[in-house]
Image (cartoon, rainbow, N blue to C red; front, side, top):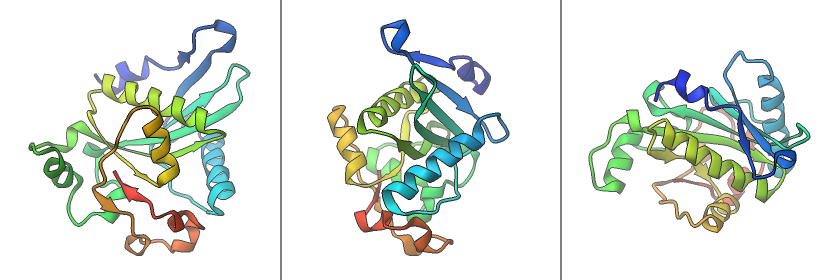
Length: 192
């Protein structure tokens, strides 16, 4: 599915009752509302980890409740678009790591990095995970890579998903100072 066709799925209404629909929308680099999303992600990371992050993935999804309030956000970058942020943590390209873990040769065109996940609650994070999973599948991106700690993995497990660890997320491998991430690395995040 092309980016244009995929984008036509959005905004996506989520929920069974029209008065209580949440809505998912896509925001690219120069789109209106992108700044609000980046601020939301920044603030969630600051609140949770005392982090001061400034790296945002090129495609950001916004989840708003029925009143239009932003309740979750997540970012995506197709691996085919170039080097991924999480590849800083890897000794080799993502496709090599995933191919070995899957036991089959795979190319970057079927892989995506998901990151910048920020939410007001664990419930809204799980809604975002479910929606992103469906959207990525419709886009033909079958292999998802992300960096996360135990709280995020708990959300996946509550959804019946068991991600595979492929590497440790070592802050020493980043080009930016680790202190920008506050206490995030104290949780010992891993690459999945």
